Length: 135
Image 1 (cartoon, rainbow, N blue to C red):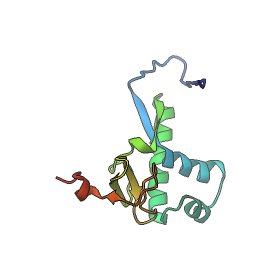
Image 2: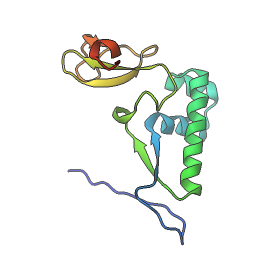
Image 3: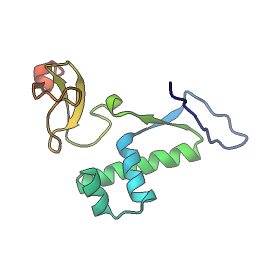
Image 4: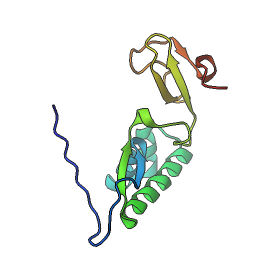
């Protein structure tokens, strides 16, 4: 069993609500890390993260806003795992797929990633319409 440590930073004299938090996705964290912590230029970040220039700047702007809001408004930051990300969360060419072999539902950028199941590596994949997501 692993031990999880949680550190909470808050301003003295302020009340922190555990219901009021900012959600930041793993890709937003990677973009912030690449650009602001590792100080890489845009082209190196874009190549490393396999994003378009437009996607990179949209995600970077969103991530910076969320980080600033979290600090200035004294809100907790929740890291949103990839499995929790919906199509509305990331402004890119994402699509929901379902594996016909194991049944796992996942979201990928279908222009940049190979369309195989991340769980069982099957190529028997159903898109939104075939899986019944589109009504």
